[in-house]
Length: 101
Image (cartoon, rainbow, N blue to C red; front, top):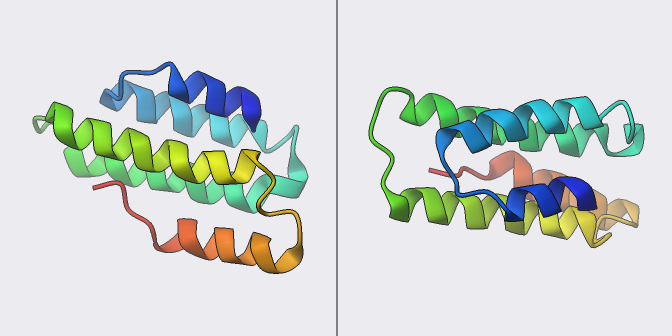
């Protein structure tokens, strides 16, 4: 998770960032099966954002907010806030109802 977060924090937030994030998150599931559900939800979140702006202009403001939100959610996961079952479920639910748009 930390490696994925570090990579994300270095990105500018173009649509390509979200496509690559989705690919990286899905690939990471094999190395972190205990985080598979969370990684799937984060990947789906990034994918929905890409679909929402496919072939449409993406303003710097929207891109910045989306990148901040995704980094915040990933940061919570990387910080271990999902260590106990209740916190893990809360984080899964937060990601499950989140949108980057």
